Structures are given as structure tokens and as C-alpha cells.
Amino acid sequence: MSSALALRTDPQPRETYYAFVGRLAAVNGVSLQDFLNDFGLPKNGFFALHGDVVDAIAQLADLNQAQVKELVTWTGLPQEGVRMAYRGEQIVSRAIRNPEVRGCPDCLRRDAKGALEPLTAMAMRGHWLLRHCHVCLLHGKMLVPLWSVTRPSVRDDVQAQLAKVFPTIIDGQLTGAVIAPSAFDNYIL
Image (cartoon, rainbow, N blue to C red; front, side, top):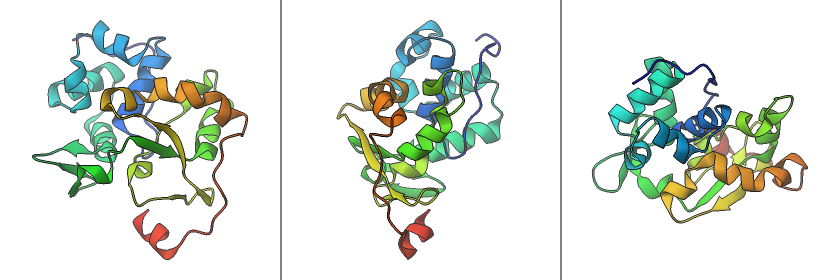
């Protein structure tokens, strides 16, 4: 494996591994698929978070072990059966892996504001994955469906999916309804 890439990005708080690597690829001007192919990284190993692939990407991105661990824990690491290790807990995979991907357009717009390449600055947060999380506590708005794709390798190609909804996020067409967070919302997040 080669040394760290000259063009890199930093992980954002609560960002998923898939979103981070998608942004890393975009910063380097390629799609996620081309990025993985260019470095000989197996697509299946990437989406299954195989240790050797995660380590190779960490080297390319110049990430330390704490950063890697943080990205992976917000993504959910596949376990035996239909379980995932998510933030130190074992949960059913359906609790975080759904065809419908939701997020906070206000957070994504904030990410993009002032960036030279706004799309490469947008980071999907791991807490948005949780089926029972419906509110962005930062903005006091409901999370909104951003895309719905059954096939995991297409669904989790975050930059490709964000590119499709980018105009509606940036121009404010896509926004969540204002809501007062419940005690449960504050507890779970």
C-alpha cells in the first residue's frame, strides 16, 4: 500500500465510515468505486468493514486508530447473524441498516456552507442511521428521507446518493418539519 494521499479530508463528528471514504474519494476527484479499484481494495471488504481494507484506507487518509474506531462505531460493524456492533452495543442490524436513509438537510447545508467543493464537505452522521431517531437535536427538526435504495453497496455509496439530492438540499427545498425534541429524543442522542 502506498503512503497517505496528498488530498485528504478530516472525519467529522459522528460521521459514518462510508460517508468519510466517499468524501475522501470525492476530494480526489473520483467515485467511490473508482477509488476502491484504483487501490485494489475489494468492494465487498469495504462494505463489510474488513480489517485489512479499513487499515489500508486509514493509511491512505492518514487516520489514527482512535479516528478509525470512531468512524466504524458510528457505522455499525457486522457481527455474527443479523447483529451489528454499534457504539459499544450489540443491536439487530435492521435497527441501523434500512433501505431509506434519513438525515438533516440543515446539517448538510451547514457542512457545505463556504466549502470550495460543497458536496465533498457533506458528512452523514451515524446517529441518523438509528431507526428510532427522528429528530435533529441541533436544529429541532425532523430527519427527512434523503434516498431509498435496497442494494447496500448502492445505498451506502453516500457521495453518489448525496449528489442526486444535492440541489434540493442546497436550495432549501428539502427540510424537516420543526418539532420539539421529546425526552426520548434527548436520551437516545
